[in-house]
Image (cartoon, rainbow, N blue to C red):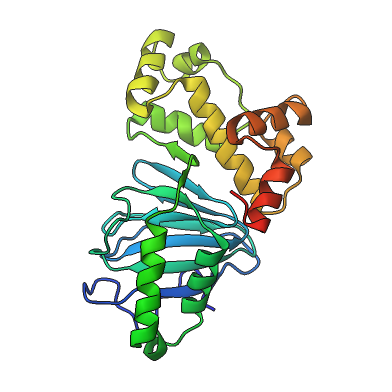
Length: 265
C-alpha cells in the first residue's frame, strides 16, 4: 500500500499502450493532499474508507465511501483524502470506450469494488497477464454503465466568486446574504446574483447548500459526529441539518452511510 504522494511504481501514466491498472493508497493519520497534476491515463478514485475530495479547475467532486470519482485523462487535478482514509486508484487507457468525457461521481457496485481491489493486489506481471487484462476489460465495460451521483460543487475562476468560495470554505458557518456578500466584494445584490447564476448554473442559496453538502460529507466520512457537523456548518439545530441532507440526498446521514456500507444505491 502506498501513501498519497508516492509515485506509482513500474507504471508510466503517460504511455498510451499501458494496461488498466489499480493500486491501493493509505492516507495514514492525517489528511493528505496530492499536488495538482495531470496524466494521459483516465483515473477512477475509489473511496474504501473515509472520503476523498478531488479538485479540478472548474469544481470539486466528493467521493464518499463506496463511490468513485472519474477524472478523464489530461484533466489537471489534486486529491485530498481524509485522515486514515483508504482509497484505490484505477488507471484506464484513454481509448477505453464508454467512459465519461468529464469529471463525475459514480456509484460503485460491490462487484466493481471487489474487481478493483483484486487488480490493486496484483503485481505488475500478474496485472499484465491475458486473464487479468480480460478481467480489466470487463471492469471498464461495467464502469461505463454506472449511474452518476450529484456530489459536485462548481467553482468559478471569476476573482470575486473565488473570493466568496474561499471564504465559505474557510468559514462554512457564515450565513451572510447575497446583499451582504455583494457589499463585501463591491457588487450590487442583483449583479452578484446574476453572476452566480451565469458562472455556476444555480442560485447563490442552492450553491451554498451544495457546498455545505460537500463539506458535510467530508466531515461525516472522516468520523465527525452529525451534531458537530451541523454546528460546524452553522445550522441552528441538528434536525435542520438532517432535513437539508435528506432533502438533497433523499436519506438521513445515518441511512446514507449505512446503505453505502451495504452496497445499496
